[in-house]
Length: 297
Image (cartoon, rainbow, N blue to C red; front, side, top):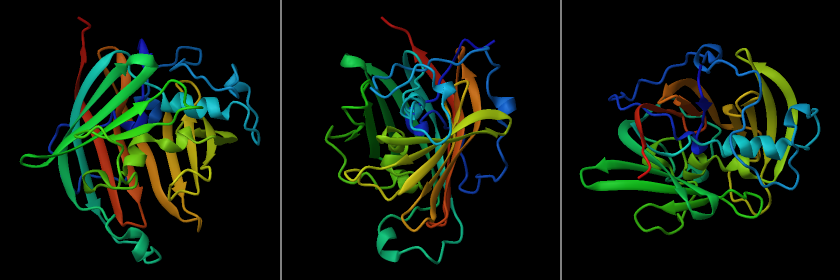
């Protein structure tokens, strides 16, 4: 029986240190009933939330209301593996045909490229209840790209920080593509789950898992290409299983699908995540097989 379940923000726990080829992305549908840990008979608490609109019983939510939906979204965002971790894996991308309706100006300098990169991720606990996640990868010999995500305990008053790993300064462009994949820096942080406008649309099954379907909308100050994002969040483990992001013309910009989970040192976490971007004509896969938990000194 699993003792815990964690899914990390930005889907970071999802890589595979295997030399993933650019064509390794598959279309197979995930089977969550086989990959999620057995149920414990109660909802799992995955993190503290300091939301003034949060309800203590999100499972009692009714479609068409926003009571408790902010709580659910932020629980999914703040689900972390306990302790300090280092994970290693790979990020691969392959190209397909690009949507002819895509705006060339919007996509300029933001087009993904086929390729595969080894990647390393770290989880740290910082003072004040802040959790930090770091992505690092060597683009080419001696040339590294890194991103730090600082996720505060109080997401109502404080937002997610996106910092350049080399300089420690805020990233200039949250829409820049990480390692030429379809993942933007904003995607890695799952910022849409921190937006203040969250609404529970429905409760439905996704591959035999009871899920909340949450509608997230950005505020006027949120600089994002997404007009809305629909998310499916597992009701038992409060983890994100699927998300679809739309632009202002109601086109699908990106679709996120968790493909599988795994158990490491008695902690369940993500193993494989795929993101497709039809307007860009590309799909990326983030996988993880190797990881270790650091013992406190």
